[in-house]
Length: 249
Image (cartoon, rainbow, N blue to C red; front, side, top):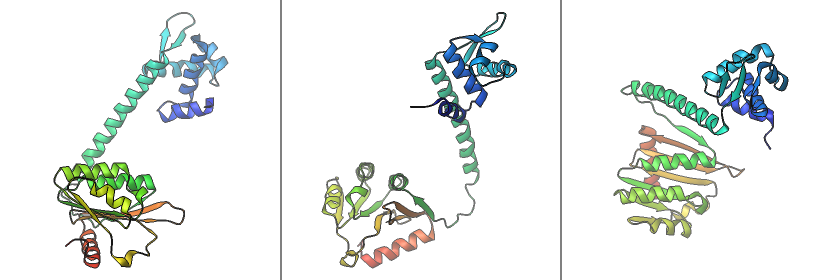
């Protein structure tokens, strides 16, 4: 069960100060109350309650009754949730709007040979889906482990195949090959015999001759991948892999 300290920390992550979180929680306990009442329940000095309550009012989280003494009443939990959610979404939009603008400003600069590392099964899953989604001409996807051919990856392969992209799978696993071959327009085959003793490889994804992702399974069963797109490294590595295994003819 969530403790009060946990709740306060959560409110802080949503943008409230510690005092604001404490006053808001105290008023939920009281229903309504004066600064003296709030100070008696919350670990907030009475002298600070006034300014904290004023801040909470500006955030739309409490109402003020102009009486003597001044009394405060919190908005409903549903309204508070909606207010904080809308504030979070607004701030998120502002932040990413700026970041998007910064990225656009860098367009036209000299491209760098970037090789990226991704660690963790879920993050590798997401990166593979992202890489495959950008395919315009062809995809080569391979894995020796059926569990690494996730439903999201299958859906992405199906979507690209429906869009006219050539989709090819490679796996020693009949289960993997069958799932890929079931997609309209897709085909699958088994890798060369010299790969039979490979017990560390995770997944490979090649897209449009200029994007590649390779992953390995670590000793603790976690997954680590490297990937590169639009780089000389990617194009050369793709050529080496395909020349070695004759994966594409």
